[in-house]
Image (cartoon, helix red, strand yellow):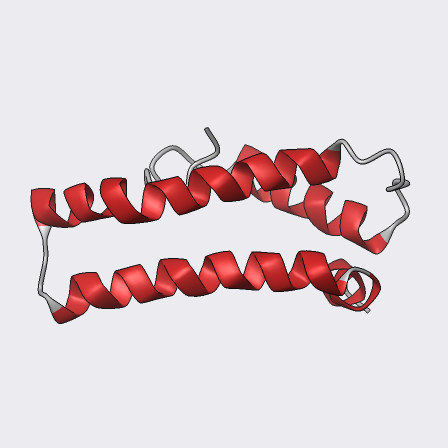
Length: 102
């Protein structure tokens, strides 16, 4: 079983919190599409609405990484490390400014 699936089973609250952030991001992207915002207007909307959500998520993410009860073999720790690797290996510009690790 993949680490993220095991993490959702072993830490349902963490999974719910992560999915809530993803859902909020998708709702904001839908608003951008529905209102046909582009260029600077879309960037401004993301800065005002999406970026605070994402910053709060990264604070939560970092807090999870510091949990003393998460051993490296714990499914949530494995999922967090996998996410860190994706961010670390991303090419410049591949992550939008709204989701980059601060």
